[in-house]
Amino acid sequence: MARLRHDQLFGPTERLYAVEGDWPLGMRMLFITLGRFRRKPTKQMLAEMQKLFEQGAKEGKVLGFYWTLGRYDGVVLSKSPDEKSHMKHMLRFAEFVATETLVAVPAEEAGKLVE
Image (cartoon, rainbow, N blue to C red; front, side, top):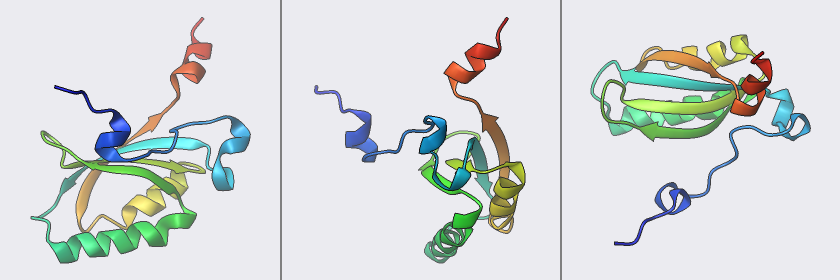
């Protein structure tokens, strides 16, 4: 059985981090947001959520959204200029999704902090 590459399964994806000058609009922080739907999702609800993602372009850039099995229903990978901008963007979804957000640091940067 042939193994599929990530891009064959999910399509092309953007790098999650880059050199400083490569981040759009000064977005230098990476966030991983875990979410649970507050109620059973409907096509109308998903369409409303898509509009909210588009409206939040100033606060952050969504790199990927994945539905998941297990404790959480979905995971969002995104970039934002700072924590407040990310929080403002994610608060738009409070009616639909309960969230938990993690700040992610690239392994190379975190490794520099180890003494």
